[in-house]
Every structure is written in C-alpha cells, then in structure tokens.
Image 1 (cartoon, rainbow, N blue to C red):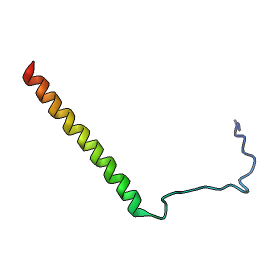
Image 2: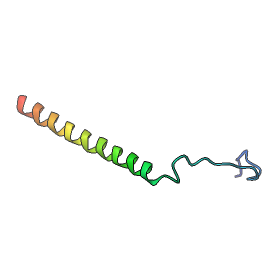
Image 3: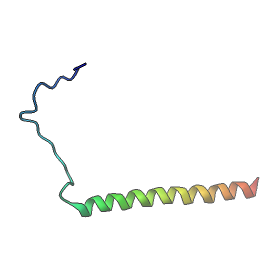
Image 4: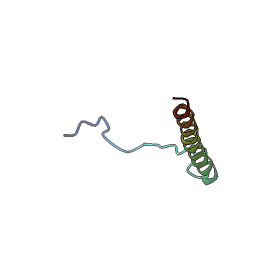
Length: 54
C-alpha cells in the first residue's frame, strides 16, 4: 500500500531549528516542567479551597 506522493528523497531538506543549541532545548524543557508543576499546584489549591467551602 504505497500511497506516498514522494517518489525520491533527492533534494530533500530538513530544518532543525535548535538541534545545535542544547541550552535552548533545556530552556524549553524547564519551561514545560514549570508549567506542568504550576498547573498541578494551582489545581490542588483550587480543589482544596472548593472542598473546604462545600
């Protein structure tokens, strides 16, 4: 089942924006971790507040 419109890989190009900058990748990782934990903490505080008021 060959449904790909690509016939040849000649002339193919790829752009890896931050592949050679590990510091930028680490920054993105740290931002993602901070957002994740921040969301968990805010949700826990909200749930505790809602439970106490109900």
